[in-house]
Image 1 (cartoon, each protein chain N blue to C red):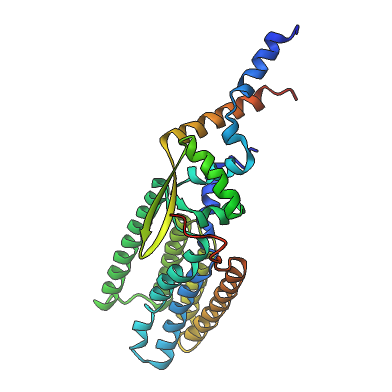
Image 2: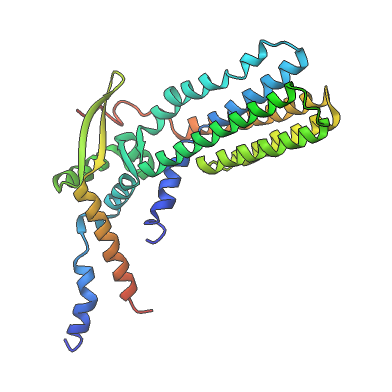
Amino acid sequence: MSSKKEGGETQSPIMEIDKLIHEPARLMIIAHLYVVESADFLFLMRQTGLTFGNLSSHLSKLEKADYVKIKKEFIGKKPHTMLKLTKKGREAFLTYRKNMKQVFEKLPE
Amino acid sequence: MNKELDLKELEKKVWLTYFQDGFWDIFIASMMLTMAIRTLTDNVWFTLGMFTGVPILVIGKKFITIPRLGHVKFSQFRMKRQIRLMATIGIAVCATVGFLLLISMGWDAPKVISSLGMAVFLALIFGLIAYFLEFPRLFIYGLMFATNEIIWGLFGEPTGPYVVLIFGSAVLVIGLIILASFIRKYPLPKEEEIPNVL
């Protein structure tokens, strides 16, 4: 309690961590989508090593939070589901990175 | 965590995934082999053969690589790099044409000097392409082309073409091994593994 202020300062960036992004699988998904313009399910499966079901479940959560846009389009004659980070998703990811950096910087040696 | 969030490295890793298929190696091998065979057989039709690598590269990417790795649109950063690469290749082609025109107009440089000049030029071009594509094996292939050019200049035919034949065969074997490894590592996804999500 005496270190409440201190504790408050230390806790604050941690409390601001976006739990939606912080989950390891979702973090991988968002990081991969961040570095490209858009990608399909197979790309994310290959890059993240997640199964289709797992990936689908995480993407649903990210889509619900409006971090990811799922767009169905045709490439040639084959239907494809392309995934893209929304502006909100990109900003959320940048904020997450900033907060994580602050958390690590404030941790004692 | 720092390594995971190194976005530049992540983007590069993703980009390089699309070079794991061996098609660029097969493309370069086809150029080397047709160049050698053209000189050894003195058959000008083999000059056209130098372009057979292009459909192999395009078709291979479309029907083997992408169905196994998925579709991706790379970011503006990568696209700008590609534009710089195209501009570099354009300048290189113009410089090569200029160089060849000089020779055809009677510039009588000693064979070794013109070979050395060509070797440096090839090493530089491949080096730049390797840099822009971030594809390290191209540096080695550039050195192979350059070395061959020097050997050709020093020893002439048929040593030169045979060296190209050896280099080309080696690169082809490397490409095929990489391709086989890629196909084994990334089998085509089964329908139940990745249903068409509509």
